Length: 268
Image (tube, rainbow, N blue to C red; front, side):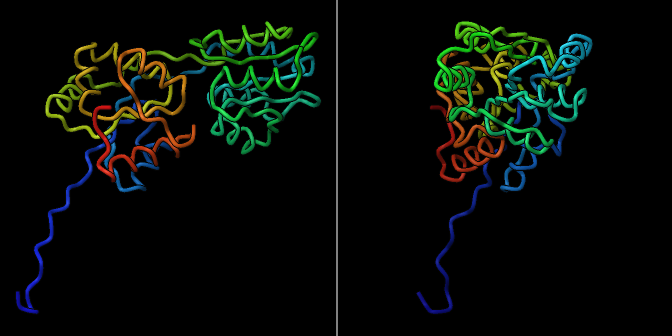
């Protein structure tokens, strides 16, 4: 080959798009992070999140200083509480599940006194148990989702605490999901990865698509779960997800990007 000739280069293949199943706008934090990494994004909002009737939460927060702890399991709970009570109550300690929840609390000027190393409810209960073998006499406010699992309230009660669980926000199926559009993408095998930021998103996407199409989707695309609880919702359905490198939306995006760039995305 003469010096003026060049070796032919292999054609580059654009990564297949990544599905975002959480409720967010096109410029939402996960979608923006994925696009910043050079990935195409498909918004499939499987769930909708709305604030609950504020009355019970307002009533609980009027007596905020009567609690020893407030436990936040998600950023939505932070938003609901800080909308009513912008500043942290004096003398009340704060626990958070996950770095993302802790980050939002700190951004709003709230302290984080207890943050378990793993972003799941069981780890939070374990962290309380390690910090104090008994919580006898402690009053804990738990502003929760309408679909909150019993892990936190039951676990802290077993440690001796009085747990006041108040519905702070509602998680429901999303009317914005274009099911036929989703099925069109699934039928042509056009999806690279599907991100799940909550067990509710797993539940609702399967319900909306139907089990056959849900299974078809995840037999061709990699499911990426933000944390162990969400991962368990997928494994219970027979799909082995990739676990985000950190239990944050950034970690979720970077894991999807890494798998697609290395050609590791696909059924697991």
